[in-house]
Amino acid sequence: MSDTTHQPLTSSQPVTVSAPPSEQADGATGATITAAGEVITEAVRYGIVIAQLGLASAKLALLSERVSGTYEYVEKCAYSVDRLADQAEALAVDRDTVGEHRDAAVVMRSVLDEAEAMAAELADLSTSFQAAADAHEADYGSVAEAANAMPVEMADRSFYSNR
Image (cartoon, rainbow, N blue to C red):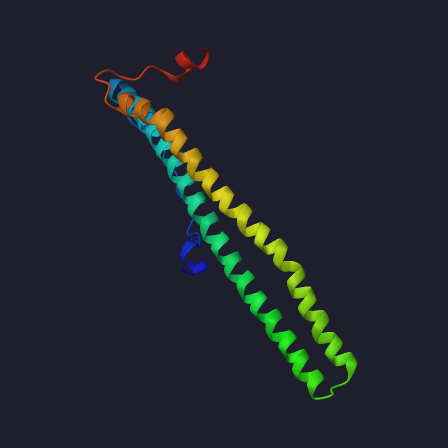
């Protein structure tokens, strides 16, 4: 999967915004549309939170895998540079050149610990984001379902805000 598959959509076209449904319709119809819009907004908000937490978890897991892959690549490079230094030494290449190769391999290995720690932290973050999504769904999933299945209109949000 490449980074280009997750690029945001952009457009040079101006965005047009129409008036909210309550300003377009008159009387009872407008109030009904507004109330329905608020309920839908709450359901959408809940779904978006769950989706965003799951997406963050997946992206962090992928990033952890990429860091681990880079870690393995750098480790192979360090081994290869050491081998080149050994060959150069066997061919009586000057000590400075051999020393530079050995120094380069040491530098490569010095970042490996940091890369491995970063990959582990990203994997932990991925697990934490998924746990947060699961906990949020466990805590509020049944509430969202019950609210969506109510046979009566949902009360105004301000009613619940002081509780």
